Length: 237
Image: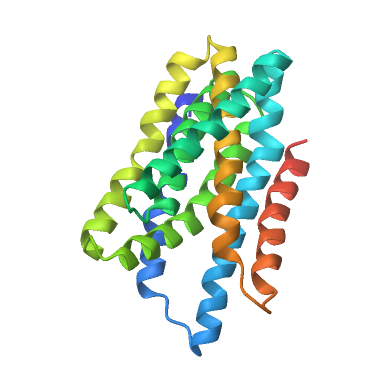
């Protein structure tokens, strides 16, 4: 199997976690109600922990290796400001799509970067693929819940949209593999831009939604998600 085929396979599996997470949100029913609520918030927190691990162990370290210090800072800041603008725009239109936007917005640049990493044989490629899949599952779960609660789309329409989003991964990976391999600076910019945007979303939307008064499982879920990333990082290095 070539590196391109491996990149396509990994991003396809990672993308498949999006509709799978949505499907779990459809069938998930836990009683009593307090346990169901705590479970949902724990899932949100776990996804936040995985996202933070992806920033800490892959996106920022790999990005700063490819860019000068000033450009690295600018790229990371640009990502945060861009996601801030996007969040403000959605809120201004009365939308309730924060989780969906986070899912799509971070999946695209991560898949681009993943394709480039596999092309160079970087050992962090499989780790990034695993983290993408782990974050897509809870993001798909929570984004589905969020859109259904908005009441503007039918569940079938939402599931179809999530399946379409999953196809973005392998397409972006091919583009990254073909075009970003010879452009390490652009690859670094994409990774740091994604890192800045994800960090904004973690503290603006995900951490807020994960909080529950007098409940500790969501916070432990965030620790668990970050530990998954740490373990993967230690295995690779």
